[in-house]
Length: 312
Image (cartoon, rainbow, N blue to C red; front, side, top):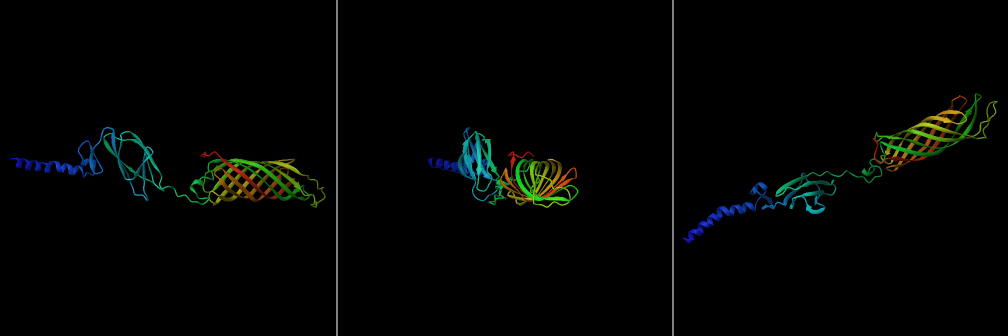
């Protein structure tokens, strides 16, 4: 009788208890476990009300390992599974060469939660002075510019109807204020300029005609428009193009003028540049029709751009 009871209990244990134990030790999903249990490390576990099972995996494979941080604490590489407190958490995933993924959320109590993380590669950064991502906006589209410049030139001036002419030396300085328009990679500045020019006729010139050669030095004040159109020779570092400045000048006589320059800009920072106009042509005409000045000139200037965030 005793032997028969032992045999019966053994058979009952084998058919009832052993399958449950085997199943509990070989789970793959939460649904493999009984209600109120979760599958953790291939074992069914009953979570307390203050516990939550978190699974974090990568949606797509990446080169290298991705690390998981929970509330700022490094937990390990992905994929990762672990029991955490059922509360609000800050989760961050980092990997070399990939954009960091960060999100916040509430962990469910006495249950499991699986998070699939998608990571994107970081933008390619070049070490060249003109192509790096950190300088992608150094040309400052949609910003205001303020420039100061100075220069000089040499040409010829004429006065009266008798053909009297003299060589002219000029010394100029001024400033400009305007907008840098957005069309990348072409650089387009539109603004207003104000400058002064000192003109000195050379006394060694032989006057022609019968009219006395009486035309002294004078200073004129210029008010004009300014347009600079430049193209990238080295993007975000060196631009080359042309500038045009038509305007109006005041002195002993009133003048209209046009100034056309070969123009270059060197970007030394996001908001600072050096402007170089190595050669230009300027023509001034007296409104009364009595005189003109034609000269070659050069300019050098500096410009700043603001604000840091583009206006448009």
